[in-house]
Image (cartoon, rainbow, N blue to C red; front, side, top):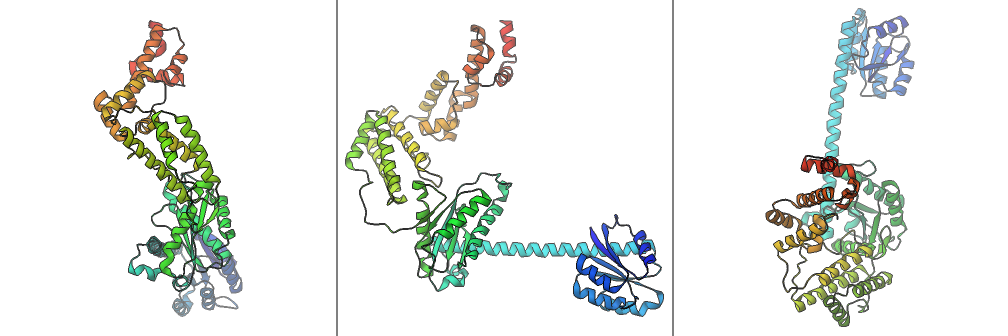
Length: 524
């Protein structure tokens, strides 16, 4: 609704104007009325109306002088003059001072409302233009920020273009500084009212919290979102005075957790002496943040240079031989106990860094390769997810490594890898015996180390139906057999063939055979 202020020294004229105006049709409301110029000035300052309609002649200050003052108070204000026939020269002068229109007394209803409609049209056009300009400014600023983020990302990643250095803020060009990495855990949307398509807004909120933290403590620097790593935010600090103080970053972690309900781990790199060393400091910050895998996230990790290499956590030749022997003898328990002990030693050693955990896992993979070469056991791990990833923790690493050992220890070592068709045959035999279990593509893929899409294709080629269709058919055939041949209740049969809800089982049964389990039992 647009606001209109009416000004006239005669109350009767004001009352008449109020009656003449089609308020609802004009999408307008009466802000106030004034009977003198001083009151009008005060009301404009307080109420900020969109339109003023004023008489040209009033005691104390005439309409022209009033309009001059009003325009100084509110330059965008639209002014309409209400004039008598003898005031035409005044009206012409008023238009020079930015009056939008003038009306002659006595004004007709239609003319008044037409003029007001014209004013509303001007306001809407102005609002549209302002909105467009504001949108252009916003998009330009967003594009500039995106370009800056891309340039800074290339600089810290070692793939800078010649023009990227020019994008570097002045505070980082000549002096020293250091990099700080904020690694945010994966967010599942919707989250705190943010939808999937509003991720950029959520990221902006996190960025804003980090920037506010820098500003609050007077830390010179620039914060940006990594252009390629979805959950990484980077702060390049233009001073080294705070590089040993983790309090500021812990404060940012706490604020992000409080306001955005998401955990962030911070890694702090060593100081750089020249912009060309930005990448080194960022890499150190990233390596430091990965220590969350060993000791948990939501804290600050300061990068520390590697000390003299220790063999304490590397796999010895004796351990490799022990693992190969356990795999050959299917002794999974010994492997499980050894693995748990070794991972605990790694996690409990405060001197251990993520890179040593990475090396330990690589040595385990080398040991499995030795086992494959020794036994001729050709088990591909190409489709298997990486053991280490950004969401890893020690518990998950233990579970995934143990699952890998179990696969090698418990699979029949025939000297050759099972073909896709052989895996399908084995899965069919398994379904025929375990149809009541939750058998999924994901389980088959993890158990037989076969790509889910590839397995689905060859399963349908061999069985003539999809995996889910085969499981359903097997369950329904067994259910029909149990209904016909046993006195078991329908709900018991439902559970025996893998359905917890009898009603859902009955629905599937009817859909398959065109008759309900109860009807089949009654017809027996």
